[in-house]
Length: 140
Image (cartoon, rainbow, N blue to C red; front, side, top):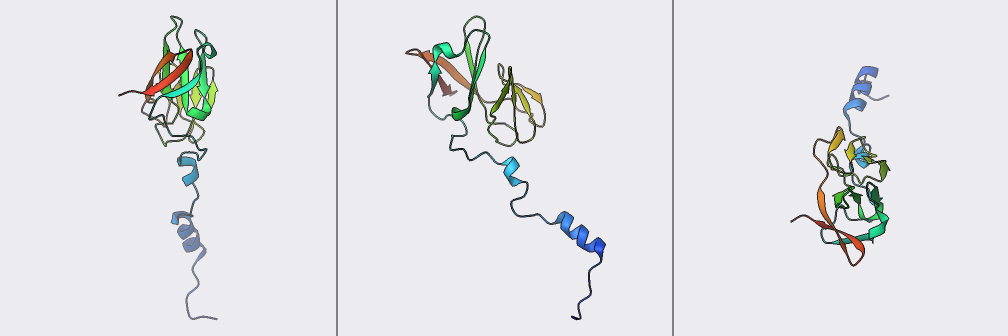
């Protein structure tokens, strides 16, 4: 038996509670490593003009972009990278985007935060139709 004192149960539990475990909890706050860029840095061709009907919203998961078309035919586009922790949002429920990391919710038509912990709206992109294709471009 060694000459060192044996720590109490309380000491062991307290130490365990404050000691970070490598890698634990970090994955939930990190952007997914799905190979897609966090948000477009150049124009991105998304799909055909007919893919988003008037009053509809479409999530382009691979490009991290959501596009909505108003009743007047105008397009709006937003990056689907959560402004809270940088996670890619891959879930669209009607017109609501739901972040898988911490549950933030955004309006896909306006980019506005519907539910915390995010407090900043999604990054707006310019959306236009070029040669029959929807193209999203970062605002400059």
